Amino acid sequence: MALEHRDEQETVKAKRDDRGAPDGSAPESPGDVSKMDTLKRTFKEFSADNITDWAAALTYYGVLALFPAIIALVSIIGLVGPSATDPLLENVGKVAPGPAKDILTSAIMGLASSKGAAGIAFVIGLVLALNSASSYVSAFTRASNAIYDVEEGRPVWKLKPQQIGIVLVLLLLLVVIAVAVVVSGPLAKEVGKVIGVGDTAVKVWDIAKIPVILVMVSFMFAFLYWAAPNVKQPGFKFVSPGGIVALVIWIVASLLFAFYVASFASNNKTYGSLGGVIAFL
Image (cartoon, rainbow, N blue to C red; front, side, top):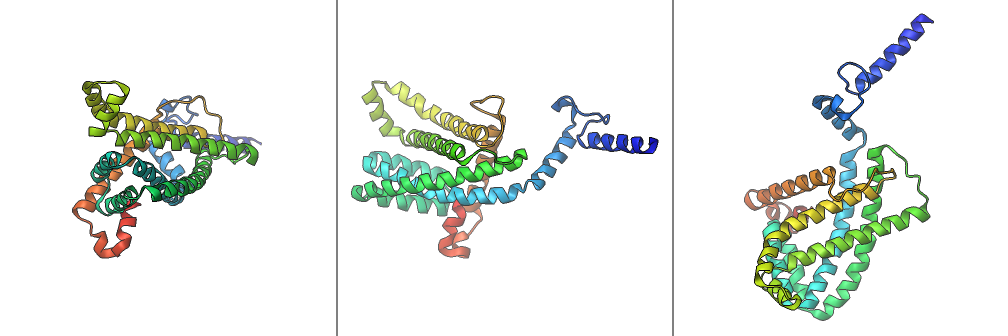
């Protein structure tokens, strides 16, 4: 009996040690765990939850949702005319890598040149975007459940309306972000005249719109992290630490890849017409 009791104590102690507390006891707060142990556990969970597989799945669904959304967005802008198209082309040229910029530029110019086609493309693009975005949110829900180590216990009649609501909120935010990108320069001045604000307010908007867009994107990440998984969250935060980290990693990775494509890569030579798709991914 004594040996069995000793073995049980050693097993409990080993489990507590695995939690990362320096004295072998269970940590009472995150501050009790060393940074090195936190990193080790993070990488261990990263591998156990198959995060790279989920990242590939989300990339797939994201690309499926991206192109219909671009078609719908560009179609709206095409209905407005060159005053909205020119600022969009200018901003696309600043942020998109070479091959991806060519794909977007040709799509924008093609739809903007035909208002009739833009109306039809808007309807088709919106339907496809809603369907693809719903698949993305479903995949994100499964991935976040895997990260939290929980099963999806919500019934379909409850889960699907929640996911559709998430999609609608995200699409609304994307539309607002797209409008913020487009409303700049001469178009911003015209909008300022319509709503009765002076040139000073327009200049302030030209400076402030980038931080505003970044905050909105961070809010999108925070909203997904809060609404998607099947867990009870303590409360919604407009900007979460995870959302900020995801935003920073996304921006840095995009800038580095854009610099690589512009300076060193030759995707067009290696992959031909598929180079633009690879750059888009």
